[in-house]
Image (tube, rainbow, N blue to C red; front, side, top):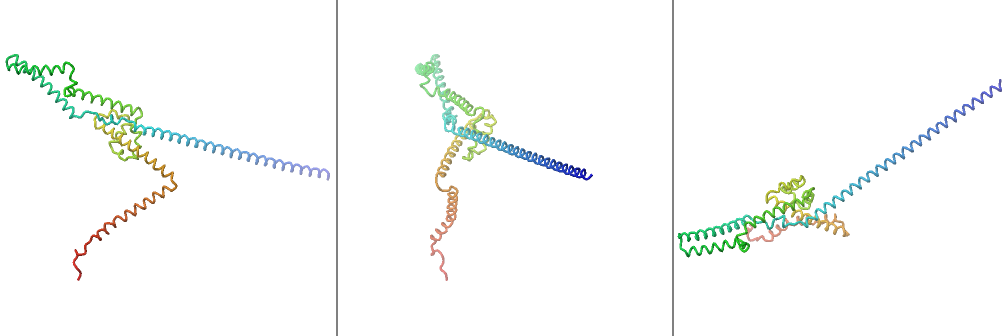
Length: 303
């Protein structure tokens, strides 16, 4: 009985050790699996973070490339201002109303002279006037009619100037509208160069804003009906060219300052300090001049 009891005790001890080893192994396996899961989760998090960084980097590069493209396109549009036909935009050869009126009056006088000469010639044939008056009038009428009928009106500017001026007006209007149509294109030109307003404040006036808005809405050509509108368009292009030249000048100045060894901020601070000192000294100068010019003999002597 004692031997069997001892064997039973040893068996129970072995079973206990086996259970403990099994529990330890299960714990180790669980801890190992947890560590693996944590490692996988950490790697997955790092991968997601890297993908997010790469995505943001690509978005940033894409935005930077888009900004560079827009800036290059905008500068190309600015450069086109130097090659515009400002003579056509300003209608420098456009006939004025006074020229049209003078040419029309000269042509009317020519017809009146021709009609009067023919009337006197016919009156002499009907014995209503003397023959020598009719002969002179007939000669004048023949010369006037010969100049017109033989195509010699080009030698008399007063005769063909009126139709020439009218045709010149129509041609210039047609050429101007066609030029503006080609300049604006499908995307519009005026509103894309409007950022030059930061270099020329005159572009911020209301009439220029209205024209730029119409250019953006593609209704500019439909609203260019009068000479005032086309003149405003020409003024906008001239002011835009001045703004572009001012932008180039500022860029040159900034590059020059950057090439120097001093700090540009310090230079601006010194300039502001000197300007303040000059403003403080200016009110004192007239007072000193007044004291210097004061004549003591103008005041009554003291008792």
